[in-house]
Image (cartoon, rainbow, N blue to C red):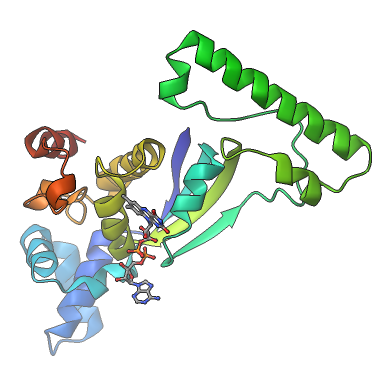
Length: 228
Ligand SMILES: Cc1cc2nc3c(=O)[nH]c(=O)nc-3n(C[C@H](O)[C@H](O)[C@H](O)COP(=O)(O)OP(=O)(O)OC[C@H]3O[C@@H](n4cnc5c(N)ncnc54)[C@H](O)[C@@H]3O)c2cc1C
């Protein structure tokens, strides 16, 4: 899996601070810009996020390029509606070489891995035969598995990212989307450390919100995300 941060709002934390300050000030935007430029936003942003004034976070957006994830994972990703997506099409792009994700539970067992890969080869061989016989890629793709690799460009604003990380960095989330979300968090944390300081599953900022479904190791998880 490859996750890159392709682009983001310049000075995301200053942009968010400016938007928040505007709400509580009678100064001009120019005056506020100067004030924001000159001072640290640490205390102010922390307060804004804690009090739940999260709409100001929507002014900072982040664009990710993601490759080598399975269609099983991209399907979960695109359930997040407050984001923009551009995904490689299986209608317009004919698969030339088989690329698929093998889950760890299968990979770790040589015999299971062999059976899995044999089946994948069979599927992709038939796909290729059908395309060569004139079946359109949009129909031949009905054969392709959940494991098939995909590429997707995703744009989310910081508010949606906090929500996304809350759900998808949690141990309850499926392993592949969790791995992807954690990589995304590590990238945005470098660019906006104040906004994403306590980001991750609910146990990073407070108590675990998973009730009976808790993984039971909030301390370990909290430490992992603090170190990210
Ligand atoms: C551990 C886990 C297991 C899951 N299992 C399943 C499953 O078995 N089956 C399944 O179908 N899905 C499953 N999902 C997906 C889940 O139901 C959501 O579709 C997905 O997590 C997207 O999250 P969301 O709807 O909160 O947020 P987003 O789409 O990211 O939206 C963010 C927030 O905006 C608000 N919002 C967005 N759209 C609307 C709207 N139309 N109306 C009102 N408010 C809105 C909500 O407050 C929402 O939380 C699972 C998710 C997780 C994390």
